[in-house]
Amino acid sequence: MRFPILALLLASAVVIGVQPSLEPKLQAQLEQLFPSATAFSAKEGSPPHFKAFVDDPDSGQPTIAGYAFWTTELEPLERGYDGPIQILAGVDLQGVLTGIIVVSHNEPYGYFSVDTPEFAEQFLRKSVTDRFRVGADIDGVSTATMTVRSASRALRNGARRIARQFLVPDTSR
Image (cartoon, rainbow, N blue to C red):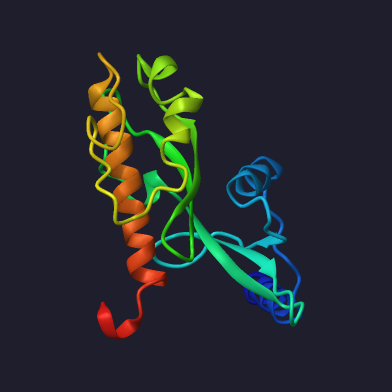
């Protein structure tokens, strides 16, 4: 009997506009990806994602500014040298990455490949239509090629999946 009451309370919170509470660390990470955002949704939908909202200057109403996703949820079979590389990524409404945060991995060479600020910076303002090719538009790291390729593929494929689902008009899918 408790479940229907909980569902009713959650539905009521959505109707009256109460923002869901996110874990503080996740909230800070989402704010890093979308610095101008005023609110974030809880993870939802298919593919799983978070929505970033900004206040519309004309109406004052929240409007979607972009989407964030975990690479390990959108590309669960993508593996680096020693397992999955969990990255939180943001995509704006133009299909451009707003940033990435490498959250966890087990890569033996991660400390000089995917953990560096330079790795994350090269994805900033990268379009989902870019190639994401290591050695071409993504810098490769000697002895960590598998790690960098895997992370790049997961970002490319995840961002493109978000763009196809939320940014492409229904008539062109």
